[in-house]
Image (cartoon, rainbow, N blue to C red; front, top):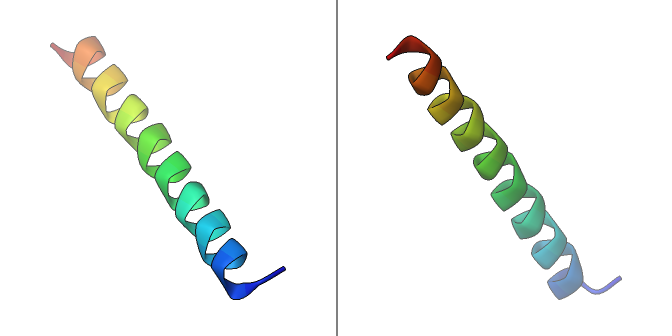
Length: 33
């Protein structure tokens, strides 16, 4: 792999984690309120 491909993969992993965290955050808000 090239360094550009590695950076792209890390970026996609980071974005995936952010989306998962956001979904859990919003789900918790819906349950609480």
